[in-house]
Length: 409
Image 1 (tube, rainbow, N blue to C red):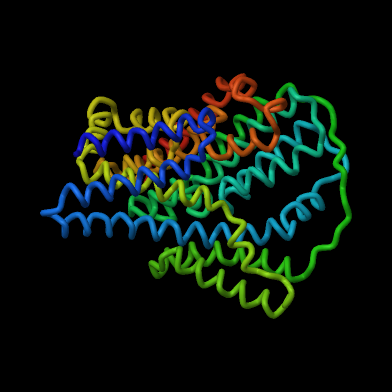
Image 2 (tube, helix red, strand yellow; image 1 turned 90 degrees about the vertical axis):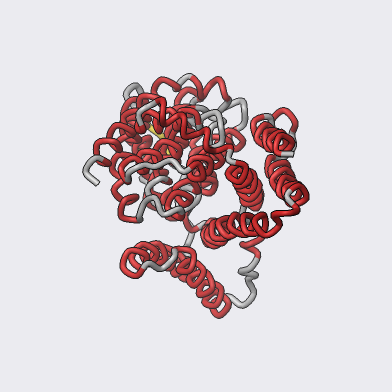
């Protein structure tokens, strides 16, 4: 039975890789195989029913905490995005004409900052929606797209609101919020190195088509509340150990109440229906499968990588591997394998699995979203791969900076 369970789990992970070939949403396949293996586990381990129930409950508790946090954060960002607050603010701040090199740096900084507050999918959609109307030549557009993907993934690693793998490692108790805030500096160094390299030969100016539009006061209020929520999450967790999900749920409930009084006609709850439930179901399926791998003892073999290689080199390699294998199951596998690392080493792992997926366009949600938003004519696997060397160099610079800073923690 254990062999059969491993076969089904393998099929679940294979379905993620071949999603583009089968055209079957990976959320559907991972959810099916993830729940199926636990069902079969109960049937096969009937004498140990209590042990099986305890293992499933432990797995579901971990998933539930992750789910509630993501639902709260994604609902908040969905509301701001639907109101157009973010794009309106950015267009107001940009001058009517500016150089391409300067615009590339601004794009990198915006992607970094915004993705630390919002999820990678929303951040990429917003960045691409601001980039496409500029009608850049294809060669220039590819440079901007590479910086956006790398910038979104780099910004996401420094805060638990920005990247699900960062959230997973934080919730496992391996790093603290203060540890992650330190990670912002080396991640930013890696991104700036890429922006400077790719922007070196950029010439010419871009004309920004500005559309004058007013920003309702209630949208500004919601934006301020979102920023205060992020600050409250950090402060309350550091000072009082309040779980971030609890702070986010309180703030989300407050948003619903405030908007009900300010705008009676708007269905504020519709924003919950517009979040990426495909991503949430995918996380559920993957974590169920990884939980079963832990239960079967299969993840013990992952420790052998850390027996063969030094810890930091193993983390660096896992980051590169995440360009081929989704970083969520990869991170979950490391967490459940029982690998022992110091805080500084866990921080390098956070950077590696968060940013390493940028090396290939298919290696992260940001890359997939950017490719689907731009279309294969503008952005494809091959065209993005032209910058593989630049991306690997920037990733290596960021990893080395993280390694250096991690030694002082």
